[in-house]
Amino acid sequence: MYNDEVQKTLRKLQLAELNIIKLFMKICEKEHLRYFMIGGTMLGAIRHKGFIPWDDDVDIGMPREDYDRLFELLKDGTYLPENFEYLNYKIKDDYKRYFSRIVDNRVLVYNASGGEEIVEAAWIDIFPLDGSPNNYILRNLRYTWVMWKRLRYHLSLMDTMVNLNRPGRPLYQRLIIGFAKRVPIGRGRDCKQILDNIDKELKKYRWAGSSTAANVFGAYAHREMVPKDVWGSKLALYPFEDVELPGPENYDAFLSRFYGEYMTPPPEGNRDKHNIRKIEFLSPENGEDT
Image 1: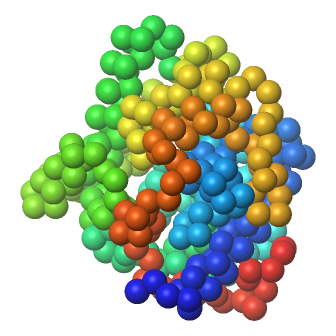
Image 2: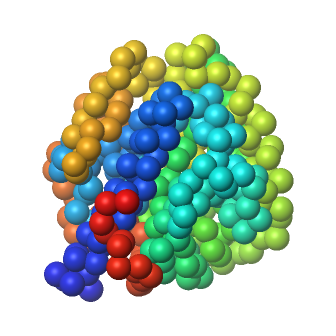
Image 3: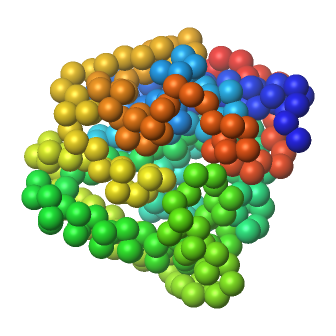
């Protein structure tokens, strides 16, 4: 059910996530780290000047060099204020995603997007943006190989971590998911070993020397390989709620690549969001500025 009460609760979650964004911005400004809005966050900035009304998370991309510097700053847990936590699969045993998160542990999200419900703290997702071969054929061959490794990772966690009901999936993904739900192929593999292998491969090409940069763990497969002239050579800032956030300089080419006619909202039944059963706020300050 989607009603006024649900929208009010979702808005409170968005404000808690906005607080995480502001914390992240302070870190990046202090440490001179580059980052971009990507995914639905970039779309929200252009179409809504903030969150997409039904969106429930935040997507940020960082050039690999900056992403790794952020990891070094936050990995020991001393940089962030109380109640906030940095998650990365290399430092937290029960965190099994490749990309990182900064979370607010005062807000619990009961997420039933996968086959099993999991409880997570309100988050912003932080993805590394990696370079790739400048040769077109080599770039696509390598990306296909990495995507095969990513598929092996997803198969190892099909019951819990894969959003089985995300709208807009291409046919081949729906067929793979349908098959994997019925045949327990790939279950039980060491997902972190697979991620270590992917991590090693992705770091072979630097952002600075590549004509194309990709978010390999983004939702749109080969469309995630974005030419560097779309990202741009200078900082482009866009209004997002009550702050300004950087995003791809050529936002029209970026958003058209992923969403087509991006200024037209999709029908309600085709809106990309997690299957959230409940949101629990453990502190009365949630939703207020930190």
